[in-house]
Length: 58
Figure 1 (tube, helix red, strand yellow):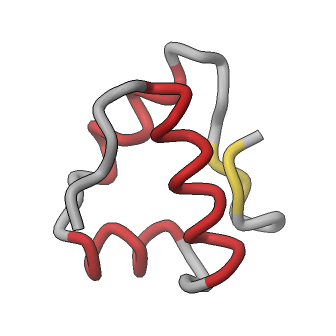
Figure 2 (tube, one colour):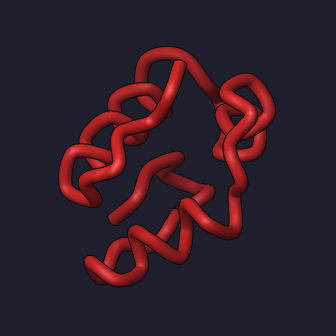
């Protein structure tokens, strides 16, 4: 699966996948062959940061 390019849609997509399919951001990135640093950088521009305890970007 290719992740969306639009940051707001990306946020929604990633959080949904984390909630429904993956127990961690590392596992999501490995399964989707996504660059974790790039993903976190894109979402940080929207002021969202990954919370391991909640397993979502908040």
